[in-house]
Structures are given as C-alpha cells and as structure tokens.
Image (cartoon, rainbow, N blue to C red; front, top):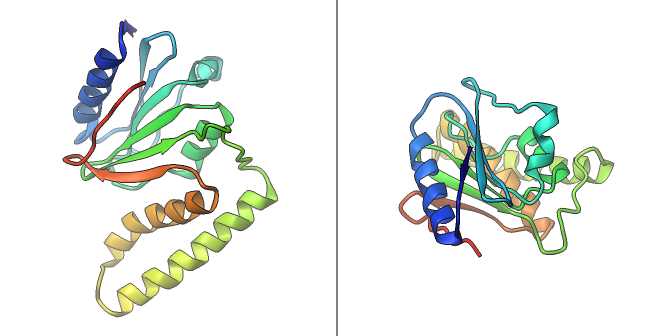
Length: 178
C-alpha cells in the first residue's frame, strides 16, 4: 500500500500504473482510495477479484483495471463500479484506455433492474445489426467484431444514460485529477 500526497503525484502514478499493465496477460485491479492510498489485486487471464470485506474501499475511489483480451468493460465491471459508487475507472487494453466517470448526480444505475436489462437489450440489438452489416460488407472481421461490439454497446448505453464514457488511444490519453 502506497500513499500519495497531492493530485499531480496521484495522476502520475495512475498514468505509470496504466502503462505497467498495458501488455500483461493477466488482469489487475488497482484501487486509488480517497485517502491517497493505492492497493493492488492480481487476478488471472480473464478475471480479477477482491475480497468482499474490501469492497468498502471502492467508494469514491479511482480504479485502474485491465482486460488483456482487449474488450471494454464487462457487465460485472459495470455492476461493481455502480454498486460500490466508484468515482472513475480507467480500463486498460493494449490499444486503448476506456474511461467511465460517475456523474455529479451519482450512478443511478441498478444493474438488477428490468430497465437496465431492457436498455442493454436495445443497445445489443442495434450493435448486432450494425456489426452484421459491417461484416457482410467485409469492413471488419469476426475478431474485430468481438472486440469492438462491447465498446459500441456501452457507448450507446451510456449515451442514453447521459454518463461520460470514452475510449482513448494511449497516445491521446491524458489524466487530470482535481
């Protein structure tokens, strides 16, 4: 566990953390708490978890997490972020950093609700139709579809919910901490 004294130091550490897990083959989760402390959790190829007794540390935290396979947030990621009131999450892949930031009004997303499920279904249908057409025109491969469709679904979903969600290349990614 390491403590950070100021926002500039914290921003630099988050940026270094992002770079350190960009090319690794297992999932990591770094929790940068409101108290300035960082905790690291090491997972496996497709999963990382933390003990339930540590979940309270997520409230108002900044998370850095990675997906070695290159996809955007999983449904479980979104559930953990919203349920535990995370301030911001940076999801790292080889090509991109996905950013999901809590609105000023709070998450207001209940992943167990029927509304959430219906909205996801609509986004999934739109994404499938769009990507089916792109494949039919040989614009993308099946592999590209697998990686891109999750991002497309979340982009639609968070646009509907008016929540800041972005995908940046590592070269375009900038971090500022208030």
